[in-house]
Length: 139
Picture 1 (cartoon, helix red, strand yellow):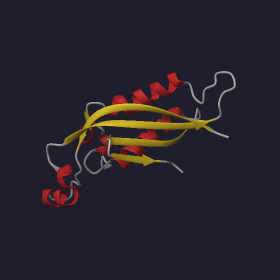
Picture 2 (cartoon, rainbow, N blue to C red):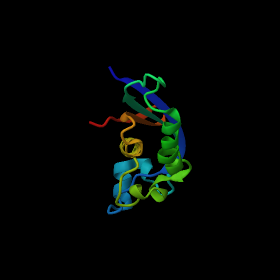
Picture 3 (cartoon, helix red, strand yellow):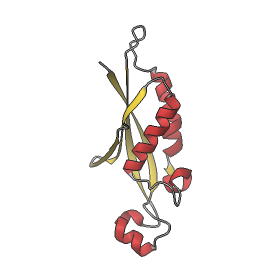
Picture 4 (cartoon, rainbow, N blue to C red):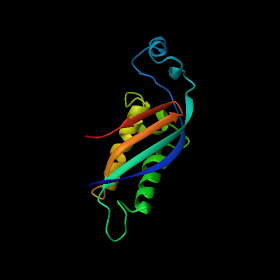
């Protein structure tokens, strides 16, 4: 039976929803206040859950030092105090929309790539605030 471990990280970042090919009016009609040109920010909370067998010697699913280093590099260093649309190339004009759903998927894929075969990422939850959380669970 697999075991699960969840590590929480937080970051503050700004973003806005905008499709570059659309007019400002169409973006505003679809995305509302989230399309405003001055961006807006959130204090995000990101929970990353990994699974695997418990090592009989260490008692770990994954070395927390390794997991923390990956989360520092792939989440905090990339997003903390960033303007996601401008500072994270994958979310620039024509790229990914910086929604919670896309952030959760992006973080999941990057953390999994960085961890390699050490463990499997089973769930990433990204909360913009206490009322809105997006979850990504890879197949």
